[in-house]
Every structure is written in C-alpha cells, then in structure tokens.
Length: 314
Image (tube, rainbow, N blue to C red; front, top):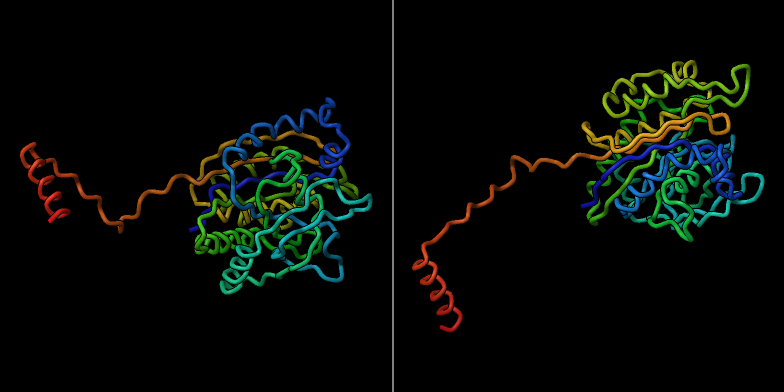
C-alpha cells in the first residue's frame, strides 16, 4: 500500500529560480535565502520519496484566461519546463507517475472532486523552483512528480476548506494504491506578497508566522479563513497559501514539525518553508494479538526437536 510520509511547503519565488540559473546563490543577498534550505535537502535525501505530489499554481504557462481549471492533475509521463518569456529554465524534464496519477484522478473524482485531467502540460517556476530548493540542481529529478495545479490567479479561487478536503481525498486515494510507495506532498506558493497596486511590496511577517504555527497545530482554523482575510493580511498574491492546505489535508491530524524556515524578502516576497511528518501510527485495535512465546524446559525442547526430525524423515 502506498502511504504519505510527509508534507513540505515552500514559496516558489521566480527570482529564486533566476538566482539558481545565473549562479548567484552565494551572493550575500541570496545566500541568506538558500542557506535555509540546506537542512531540507538533507532531509529529502534521507526521506527518499518514491513519488512527490506537487501542489502549485500555473502562471499562464499551461493555461490562459481562456481556460482556467480550479484543480488540474497532471497524468502525463513527463512535463517539460515552460518558456516563461526568457526561454525554458535549464532544469530537468519532470517525470510523472501516470499510473498513480490516474488512480488519484479516479478516486478523487468518484469522491466528487471535479478534477481536470491533463495529459499534456508544461510546468513553470511554480513547480520547478521548489524542486530546486529541495533537491538541488541534479541532472534529473530523483523521483517522479505528479503536478496538481490550483487556480489562485482568477477569482474565485477555491476556499481553504475545499483545498484541505481535497488533500483528504488525495490521501485516501494514495492509501488505496496497491504498490508500496513512499509519497511526499508539496504545497507551494506564498507567503505574504503583493506584486502590483498601491500595496505592492506588502509583507506581513506576523501573519505568515501565525499561519505556519496553525499549519502544524490548528489547520482547522486556517480552513475557516475567508479569501478576504488572505487578501487583507497577506496581499493579493497571499491567496496562494490555500495550496499549502492541500498538503496539510493529506497528512494526519497530529503531525511532527521537523523543520521551519522564514526570511524576508526574496525579491518582493516573504519566503516560508516547513516540513511536517506523519507520526508513526499505533497498531489497529482490531489487529490480531501477537502470540506470547512459550518457553519449554530443556527436556521438552529436545523431545520437540526429535519429533520434528521424525516427521521429516518418517
């Protein structure tokens, strides 16, 4: 049976990708950002997921204003990097997991979540920047990735409650998949930022840190948060944080916070990052009790051994 072992959330600032691509990660400004992900890369290397499900938002690369699905699941065998106006990023092609993706699509749709199934799609910085932050810059990504694009660009985006419940449905789907796979769910986007209008450059660290606290301890409080509160407190683009709730919904109620990182700014964005692990589950009360070993006296053990020999040679 496949199982979700952890959830990871991270901002996906495009300027972070540019710093990686242009070899500027050791500059003082960027070193502050990238140093916060060193432990995360070590954790990911030890976790060795077989598959990642990456929740992100497309930035007019795969979709346009002509077609904007609320939830779109990538079921293809591979997803090339998109040309975002200055050529595709020099990163590996994202390899998918069509079998698990199709299984998730079937399970989630039958659970009454209307996913759009996408069999051909390019992926932009919303997905590839977090992969860089968690895996570095390898020649190929170390595991298949299933993209799940969420509309947080055009009104109305899905509510936090809907995103959380989609995570629950994804967890159910993963756990009903027969192959033994270790799955990590990524939630990307945010944190507080606004890129245009009178409040351009807004960053609200107090709101961001409270969001991280509640993501671990009280996600139901975040589920109830209306769109207008995200917009007011975290800026127009802060609504991207609802995607983190898909990740959180896919985990157990009680999780262990492994690592957290927060810094401002990166470009004009607050950078947030968290790793949450599912705690080891207690054995089911319906499981058959283990038999207590019966200790035989030496003479009895010898007699039992002779009986076994006699059965073999008799």
